[in-house]
View 1 (cartoon, rainbow, N blue to C red):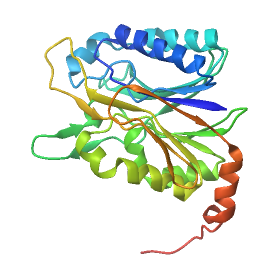
View 2 (cartoon, helix red, strand yellow):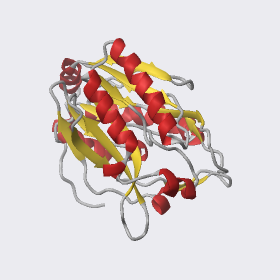
View 3 (tube, helix red, strand yellow):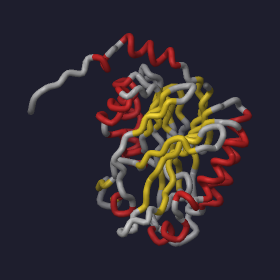
View 4 (cartoon, one colour):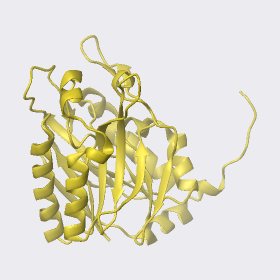
Length: 277
């Protein structure tokens, strides 16, 4: 299966983002991709909570989801929507950060709500409290497809090896890591984290990414992301790096490479229970 990993610069206007991604899906399909991946928060990237409350919807009413389902069906491709910000109806008003896997008929065949919330103080001027706006998920997800078994993660999940190991033990051969990474933490940690997760599990890691300075139609704190969408082999090699400009990376997924990496270093068969500390 030829996979296409998108790197985009989403604004806070969902209709504009849908049009941009739809055009990129056309490009990827014309290049022969049968599986396309978009990054985290494809529909509306903003730090402005009022803007989120204004433009985000529930899943059943979300125009980005319905538009991309229709697009996947018209092209006959598998599509990973890295995630969408969605209203949940929760009393506290928090959103879901939810990933979707769409099959070539446009059917939603899997959903995953981001488990780990990005609540960090990167510096005195850069602070994030994702849990203030988004409720965390509590369920890991693995999906069998005709071309590979996929493990779903989102962005900050990459820092939690136990999740990835659980996905691999459940059969994952390809781990999806859509992201909107901070430029500071991205420069320090993005590539080594993704390579480590691939090495530990013997999985391909496909990391679609947001990049650059994100346009805002309303007054909002500036938001920028690191970019560098990556494709990492099951042996931990970086096969492609998108740099900092929007674009598309391609890879021919080969399950034999997963088997080869795991045969060379069969660490997934060496887990042992232990006490303490």
